[in-house]
Amino acid sequence: MQRRGLVIGNWKMNGTLLFTQELACAVRDGVLERIGQQRLSCDLVLCPPFTGLSVARHALSEAPVGLGGQNMSDAVSGPYTGEISGAMLRDVGCSHVLLGHSERRTLFGEENAGIARKMAAAFQEGLQPVICLGETLQERTAERTLEVIRTQWMALVPAILAAAEPHPPWILAYEPVWAIGTGRHATPDQIQEVHGFIRQQLSDHLGATVASRVQILYGGSVTPANAAAIFAQQDVDGGLIGGASLAAATFLAIADAYPKHVSIEE
Ligand code: 13P
Image (cartoon, rainbow, N blue to C red; front, top):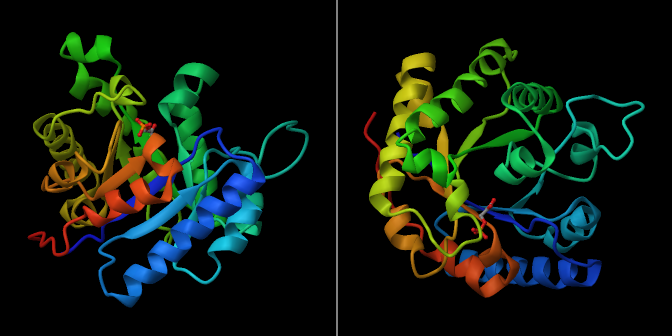
């Protein structure tokens, strides 16, 4: 089967409303131009900060660009000061939500069990969760990368198995912590090794059909210069882009690097 390519822009904590308006409009214009020229080869999603979601939704309305939150609560509503629910993300027009980003894990103490609860809550709201997995430099140096990825993945399996069908598709993103915002991306070989391992884990726990369908994105210092080599890897289905998504030209240039026809054997 053929998995569609997907490139997501994670703006992190950047952008006034004016910035959001201008950047989302520039992405919209670039997407519409590419569609007109039949040269858009992957799907696109933007994840501005919560405060920019409504403005971005408005700016993108004529273009097939998805919108995502950068995080959400596992609770539905109630006394959770400072939190945003999945229903609120849906209400503002989101189709996706990033969960378990390494900045959430390291700076805000998020752990595997809580991330799995958020995944279940996202399913209940009809949101497509994009769950981030990745090792630190220390873990890679100690040759513990695959063990760490496996532990992060295994925490999600019960939530996936328990989710009532049909639930929205879910997406995994491999983001080595040492490659995020450092300008030091993992090599295509390192990326394929981890993505192939994740695909095998998917197959072992959920079967070959599910494994062949799930999109696995790579994130960590992706730029227009390195995107094509990364996207050419067999088990890479797109990218989760931080810094380079803050300008329409670089974000769209990364999307342009996605190969037109990727044929995946079942
Ligand atoms: P950079 O592309 O800035 O390295 O960030 C990657 C990332 O964390 C996307 O979620």
